Length: 487
Image (cartoon, rainbow, N blue to C red; front, side, top):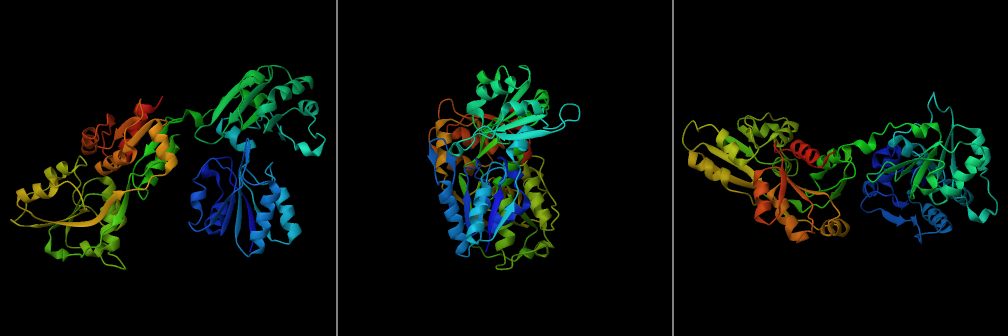
């Protein structure tokens, strides 16, 4: 087996290479740094052994010698090991030391490069490290050399004389002294400087200064400090996204949260998943579908449960509904049906049960059958209304929602009020959220609802709804959040 030294990139999980993601997904053991995002570790197998080797001020999970020993020991045991390192393993990542230890022990290893923060952080701050009109080369240097060496390799005055762009990593605490030496080496006091803290992450923060002022500019670690003419360019894009700096709670079931999370993340938000519900299957016997004129689906969950469990173990396909008209309560549900090869006959203008009831045609003859595939517990507006109209309605529970076990850190963040907004996409998410969280901090986070039924439930349970999506879809919810929280 092999030990893989994998660069995780500077923080944005989307910057992990495809090779790195594939290795992480199959690894027996993952030895990881303090990466700043749990998303990367979620790519690993649930049964993989996770070993933290992170370092923080005043805290070290494993010394470098202990990390080397773990890699050698697990590698010799015939396991597939991923050593997941922030940035690039060979750019101030001590990957060279780990590779030396593995080579000396006769353990096979492979290097998987990652995007170094020396390039990634400036890029996310809109600073090109080279620019035809300003800099033809760049130098990457550490501001925190190994104190055990007894000597210093960094000649700051010589670096000043070399010109071009200088990118300093791990130098925030010493930036005032470094700036003095660079000016002593000939760089002008008004040379632009930009320090990008937590580059590529939702809490990225860029400080712009000059060599003369950077020492008192409040540069915090970890920062990539860029010195040179390119630092005067302001091509900011990452920090100008409409939801940048906002923390938004997603309460959807984990199985459903990915679309909303991806949309919010792309707009700059830091997304905190606190699924207040979990979707669980319900065993059901599928009735004879040719006895019905209509089959109605009220959610994406209902579509998946109906088709995947309707004829275990193989499930159903589009042929099952060949002679039946199909209604969906909204475009998301209709899209899920389209993925199964089914074109929907009826979608209401508003995506609530009342609107679907209004849009339903009169039955051609009394007693036309309607099969309603839905959650085990749901409102009875639709079946009662269709029954009054002359339809014969059978309710088929195909799944149920239960209260989810919350992540303690996410739960604490919500209770402490360190979030900007909480989103609700159904009445069940509201009810279970209130049961999980209890009273909200004062001031409470902004509550945004996907539609009127969800809003009514929130108000009944004592929450103040700040806004409701005009279009009762994920797109509508995201648009409302941008209008409410954006610049």
